[in-house]
Length: 259
Ligand code: ADP
Ligand code: MG
Image 1 (cartoon, rainbow, N blue to C red):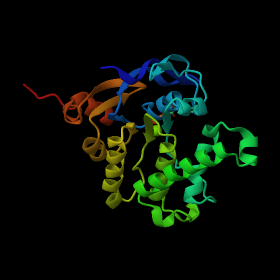
Image 2: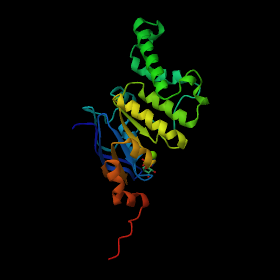
Image 3: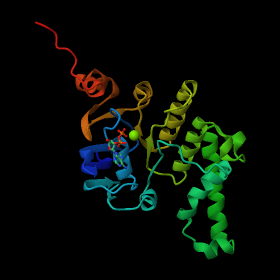
Image 4: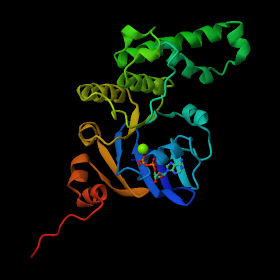
């Protein structure tokens, strides 16, 4: 089995704070992989390094046979790896449709003259992008708001829009940073179902999330982080039985039975 994403010996420090301290992890093509761990254990920094939003100090990041280290986010997205952010990022003043179309711009590669003169290639590309955007808005259940400005969306709906934007370029892997944090609990199952559907289309996911029930229900593989590196990994059920995971979260060792 070859991994789609393979990270080895990743390091990233901020003024002496070792946010990521020798982390290694792999994500299988087509999988839904969870990344959990206590607050401050380096999950967000890891995915910032993977997606090019932070430079790493050392380590290797291989994706689909290519070395990603040192590449900017846009170049990484073109290679098939996109992400969402813990703090939701959408263009409030743009319609839902335009929020997705704007993502396609750097991928068009047709230059300003193509756009200016509305060349045939430009129109075809634009037509395909719009069809894809409509499909994705349908997938996340926001079709009735497609022409509304994103500002009218609830927090959870904005997260779904940001997810749709990350799917625009037909990536092989999408990294999601806390997709259901702050989302109305009655809506969390819907998010899981949307991710499952997208995954059946072939997209792999690496999901950072605190909601353990969500991760257990969705992921085939879970990586547990502690202090900047992988503590353990395995199927969700096995990870939950692992006493080291509890220790990491509680910051203490559970009491030993007295003999
Ligand atoms: P997690 O996502 O697991 O909660 P983070 O990756 O956000 O963890 O943070 C890991 C550690 O790195 C924390 O101690 C955090 O305070 C620190 N850290 C993260 N980003 C920065 C930054 N930009 N500058 C300084 N310290 C940071
Ligand atoms: Mg985080």
